[in-house]
Length: 198
Image (cartoon, rainbow, N blue to C red; front, side):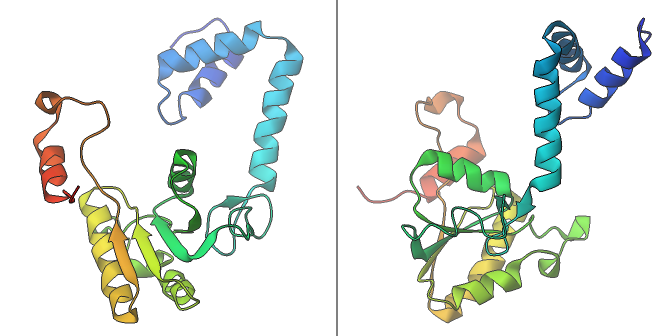
């Protein structure tokens, strides 16, 4: 790319490294930043710096937090007998947005993936087992519906079932409002095998 400004070129280059942002989107963002007043850009930069410098991971669940213990883990209104296991902190936020869950979370930090050199010992599975010994009655495994996510779910279930803990897997299948003719075969198969009584 041959741009009239090396600063613009550097900005576009750095923005294009963000997930989901290609060169075209990075260019739009860079030109937008040039148009807005400088205080707006300064606020954005300050916010990003504060996020990077102050954000930490909760010592209990592994989710994002401003303190040692996140607001979810410190909320006494939440059901402490119910634990939802997710791959990454952003998954926890997605479930929170649904408003359908009022228990606690446990972030694994990924999934078991031997091809990538990730085994159970690289994840926070031992910590999960320890947490389950502290009055947890039910664990919902909400890993992604991938081969690695399913393998991780099965591995966790094999550790928790002998502890007489109810282990559930989130349902997979058809999105709300979709038409059967447009659904791919694996998703439809998951919907049929994961059916429940009405």
